[in-house]
Amino acid sequence: VYAAYRPIEQFRVGLGLQALVGTFRSTTYFSACPADRLVCAAEDPQYDAFSELKVGPIFAPSANFGMIGAPGENFRIGASLQLPFAINAPAKVSVRLPNAVVFDKAHQDGTDAHVRFKLPAVARFGVEYRTKTGENQLLRVELAYVREFWSMHEAIDITPDNLTLVGITGFPSPFGVSSISIPRKFEDSNSFRLGGEYSFKLASYILDLRAGAVFETSAIPTAYVSPLTVDGNKLIFSIGGGLHIGEHWRLDASYARVAHFAIDVPPNEARVPRVNPVAGNPTDTESVNGGEYLSRANVFGVGLDYKF
Image 1 (spheres, rainbow, N blue to C red):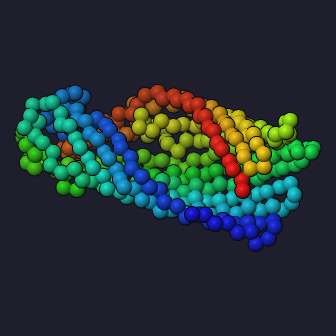
Image 2 (tube, one colour):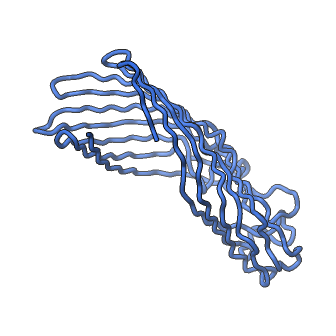
Image 3 (cartoon, rainbow, N blue to C red):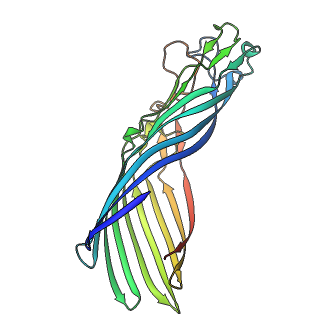
């Protein structure tokens, strides 16, 4: 729910109340070999277990607010702040136990858990210049800066509620499944954005042509880049257009190319441990995210706008 107010012609302010709602599902393999090599080798595939995590319902309230000032006919200045989302939701965990002989008579008892993590606050600031270059012709250029406060995304915490494994040979029965904390250790990211739009009349239609470019720093320190989240410093280039049909309708289309810079995570600097809910000796487990990462993306968008 959003509301905006313009007390004077040169200034307007807005407020929005939001809620992030929904569910998500994740599957992963983990080693059920207790740390560290208490009864087995962590790389032994016989101790690999398949798990499914279903989280929801999610209900995370938040809000945002912003302002736009127009000090003159050609300039606009805007700023906004998106508050963070705190996810704290129930979950169901199901595990297909490993093939190792010690699990032959074992089974899972209970499925309930809780998942907690935070999504960041976002601050935005932009300046726009607009000018008429002729009849039915308008040029707009905008420069913007965005800071996403990802440093509040420290970890994804999964806490089982009385979830146990029963009948594992050589283990206490029932054996409580430990809490899992997936370290994220994100950092604040910055992006610098430049975009332009040129509107003109083509036959009996108004056509908007758009283009833009973004440079964005990654929120993920190199040591914590992993297959779960591949991200790095990136460049984004985009083009698009809008076609006005009559007084009320506008059709839009866009294309963007996202190019990440290559990331090399030396194994001796990697910091993401393997997931292991089976507690054993109090020793650090091996990091498993060392390697080279590279990603590319093509983004296509279409839109339909009706103005009353």
